[in-house]
Image 1 (tube, one colour):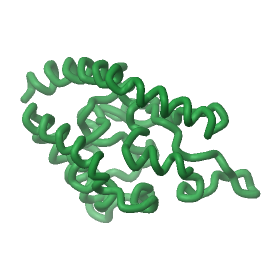
Image 2 (spheres, helix red, strand yellow):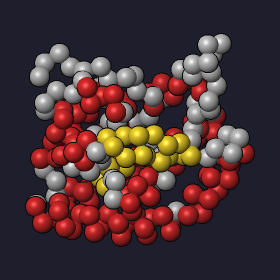
Image 3 (cartoon, helix red, strand yellow):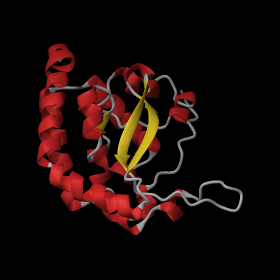
Image 4 (cartoon, helix red, strand yellow):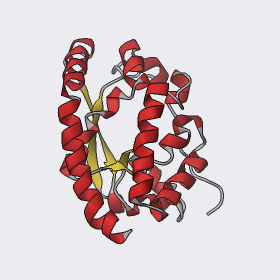
Length: 205
């Protein structure tokens, strides 16, 4: 497992992400053009996220929300800012395609715990922090076992299980399950399901 995790997996990530970006370039280009028109020239969404060993990097995704604010200048709730185009893009996980660039850069892996918000670092318990022992992924064990249809605690249980059980066979299984679930649109039943509430921590350590 050590050889796979430290040598084979990183090499596979870069090769697969490069090939994937080439194959998906027509979809990437069309989505980029559409969002440029729909979002006033802003096709991409950038945000700082914690990666391996909690090192901060900037994730890139297709922008699926507008920047509308309330009378006080604060952004409206996510549900109100998600556009019709954004709903379609999320439905088929097209917003994740730009993250292949993060994989090529070495910030992410194809498979691993999803990179979450920096503020969650303050409320993880000791076990949950173990999700940062490896690079975050575009997809992962939690995503193929419920995605946003499961609780935060169960997500973290799946993440930690993956960290402890990384293998070539498991990664291949996750890749095929991801492709299957994207086409089936499994784990996203509505706009509300697709936008998880903030994680505020667990009561037990």
